[in-house]
Image (cartoon, rainbow, N blue to C red; front, side, top):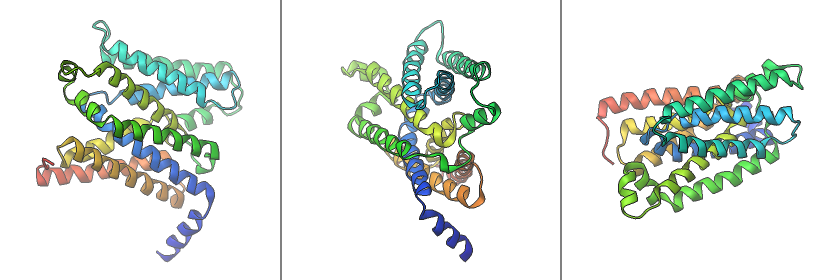
Length: 284
């Protein structure tokens, strides 16, 4: 046990580990804040759909030779978030069908482009890294950290400043519209913020695992708490703890960061599920 703590302490002194912890905590916090809203509005799979879009955008950036794919990936993902919202309101294309159309199409096109115009000798490795996250925390650069910090501050400020409006739109969109609130605008802003979170998260957990960070903490908190505020706070705490635990386990065991964090989220969800069964859930 002493050896484990000694090894962990030596790792924590290194800048690349500190960068990974900062990014992991910020991503977990931002994902959990809006995760509750997405789950309650039954938009859970929008994260999954947009993550596939981000994969396609990264493939395009790689094909055209961009050294920094963040701006292009962010722009395309935000545009698709808006399209998903618009298509979801279309009577001819329901929300789940719209997500399926955009996500599957983006994933297929991205993989096709990476094969047709490959600039790498290890396509399978590149695809696996993009889908499931980097296997090494050494890949996070100072630019990645600062970009994550800036975007995370924007996300947290958005949630805090518009908390009451997000609450209204989440539980009763028609009532929010009746009271003069611009529900459509706030839905649009929520979709855009989720797109930002997803693009930032891809570096750490990969496109296929991002939705787990959004969904699992919220579902875990809902097993025990019932009020929106309590669930949101509990979800944030759970998400940050799971991210830290997953990162530390990954460092010590040498496992993929993203998969390890999601694995911890699953374990915590099972624990809260059991607690919820025993206590029957709380109202506050």
